[in-house]
Length: 196
Length: 421
Image (cartoon, rainbow over all chains, first blue to last red; front, top):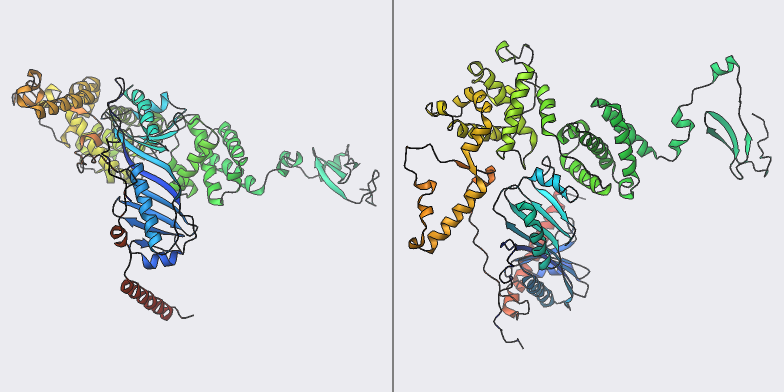
């Protein structure tokens, strides 16, 4: 039986601390994995599902898509699945459950084992330009800035272990998080460095 | 050499010839006993018949080094010589290559990657000595793809834990400018186009500094900015004869490749110069455009520090003020403060020059391509019930399956007809 719908408060954090930036990074992509717990026949799945793509010569997995939450799944014959494109952890889990249901309806005894968030990507805008050449000098042990290769500076933060892409326009991309708090913490750490 | 070939110690017949410090020795491979020492003294005529043994072969240093590594080390030395680098650079680059080779991931890499690694080691050495070598040059010399180079470069810097300084812009300007074939008349370079090297270098440097200060360099490939600056410097030194020459033609007669972004950098630099010209009293009246401003580059550069300060206001302060203004306007016109009314937007027309533009990178000055509305706050818990009908929309009907199978079979048949076994 479905559980009664309880009104949920927004997932984003409440009023930021007084000394923080006041900017909250938006989550853009969540990658999660789950084990469906049974071997799958990818040819059958590709035949019987409308939303599946399967080119064994190109890639050894079925690529499946659903509209809500708008996500893509890679389904392997071992029964393991990767779910990408969700904008929150909860949406990623809901999407993964829907893919598992599709596979069940296609005739496989799919379960939902070891669901895990593997990576979270967030982005935000500090709204002021950043002298990347200056940042790579002052924080050289964490930074890599090669304008001949890529316009952004790659900042590898140690605590938390997050990689940030910092651009001259002030836009920042944060990736490598397993939990959302790591994204927020990484941004709060980098903001005073960027503000300088 | 004595015949027989038995080790006097253990009696084994497994004797091998081993070269050690230019002496040939016969050694038992079982017990290590040195059977013959080789000739210690020679007559003059004997020495004439002896072959010279190279140091690296006689010390046995190459016995531990694989052929692939030896080839790579030779390529490193070759590349250093082609680039005419100082001899100390060669040893450093070779050391980096050897260091890289100690990692199993590099030893097992494809030949293409090992070839590119040669370039990476040379580039890192040059960067550490502030020698302005670009990745483009290295890739051209190695006939390598920049993408492959980039991957290996980033990997090796991380693997060896190296601190690689940034490319020095001033040094790059000097090297790059010097490669322009404009300092002597030739069949392709008319006399009016010939320019003094020092004058051109000095002006180009000033223009590149100006570009750097006005956010045209950060985040961009350094070379196209320098190409644009060199062109403007050259044009401005004799504008009457050179304004008719285009950037493309300039690069062609100077025998230098025209990088694609250079035209865009040129336009940006001209816009900056025009803004500065608006602040110079005797140029305001001339109503300059992107062509005529070139004639006055000398003057503009002479006063560039003052002009940049006057022409551009602090971009950050302006953005914050602008946002504050917007918020106040949204709250209601009655709440608008007096300071808002006296902002630069309300200056009387014609009394002052156009209000200074904010000093921001070009990407921040362009209007956003599309306005992304903030995403609605999600109330998804992940535990919602999933209805059957929602899932069924993703399943094919039996008729659809039959049709799909028919189509697949037809495609298979068509394929086998066109490709008979």
